Image (cartoon, rainbow, N blue to C red; front, top):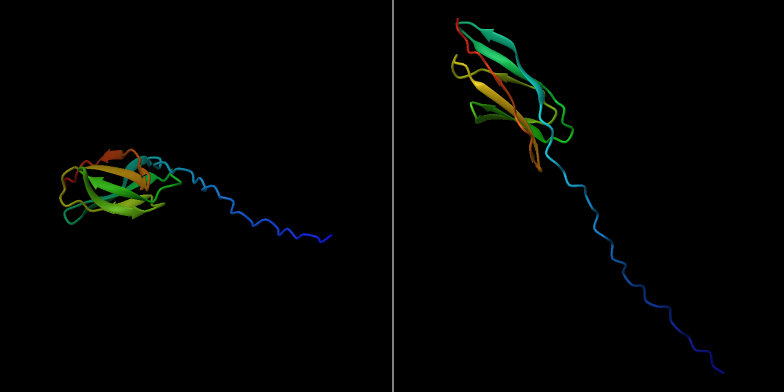
Amino acid sequence: MKATYTPPAKPTATPVPPTDTPKRSPPAAPKELSITEGVCNSQEYSFKLAWLDVATNEDGYRIYRDKQLIATLKASSASFAESPPDSDGHSYAVEAFNQAGSSSQASVQDGGCVH
């Protein structure tokens, strides 16, 4: 009796399930936005906006003066040097952002510069 040879079964591709990357959520809003290091005299009006960087998943920060975007900063920033275009008071807002969206805005009002 002759032995019959049965070839092994061809391997079949096992589908690899897609990797579930966790969905990113918008970052937390900056905390304790304040105005510091102000200079107000006849030659200069400047100050620093400062906040606590509480987000861990931000791509950066956006700075607004009177609801107009004036700067975009890198992630982990915690301050912005400002020299307003005039000595009037202005409102400022800071928000963190990433690919999923933006945080709520922290806001502060500067009192202007009277010299």
